[in-house]
Length: 179
Image (cartoon, rainbow, N blue to C red; front, side, top):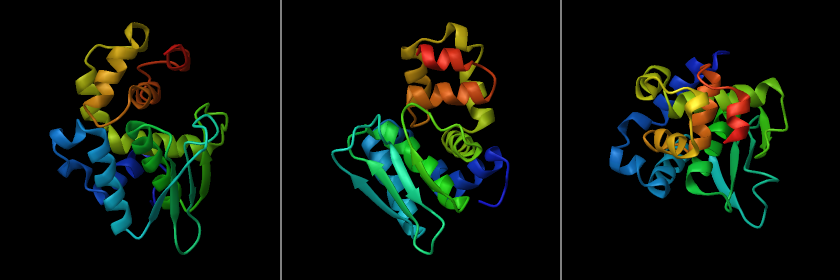
């Protein structure tokens, strides 16, 4: 990923993983969508592994992206939608040639972590398509069920959809933490 703009990087990540070719049937089956993305990542010579017996609150994923053989690790205890976002987040690290350890609490506020979140969200939920699907929904009116439904339409979680809304100024961090 050569661009500093996470929106542009997300579009590029979406292109190289060929996310647009995923059918709505695959998007609606979280495990199948995750498998398809892992296959696409592995075709790009990124090793994707899953770790076991690690609490999701400790780690959702990590990447070793600055060496000759990039590695992305996903937490096997996470659910498929969470792993999908983590995979894209960690692939952004690989694309930015950085390493990352990502947690559920978003305790790291480093710029690279936010850029990887934004890149992953843009890859899963392209800005224009996402805003069209949102319609008039804003963070104040958002419920957990609504966020989940919005996310599911993109093969994402409700959490990822809410993060995307925050990024696009359609929700606040207070909305995110409330949900």
